Amino acid sequence: MADDKTQTAGQDRARISLSEDYEVRDWSEKFGVTPEQLHAAVQAVGSMAKDVEAYLQRSR
Image (tube, rainbow, N blue to C red; front, side):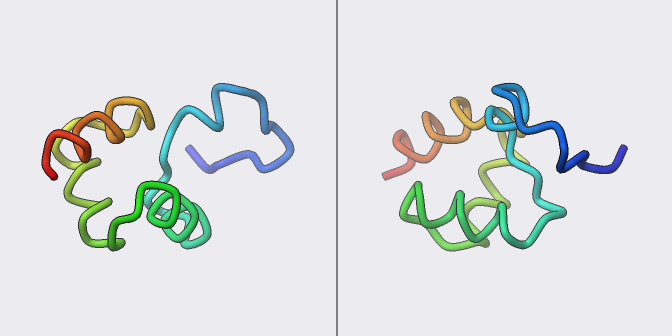
């Protein structure tokens, strides 16, 4: 399903969409990782931002 950019409620901010370049850029900057590290984290734990953040923190 395509990302509906008119719907920007909390649910949209809680997930990381790797298909959107701006999201990969923004989340990578937020977590202080490369886009490749972000992709690997999402592959490992799914697209929930809190899960990705926890995974990246454990990986350091």
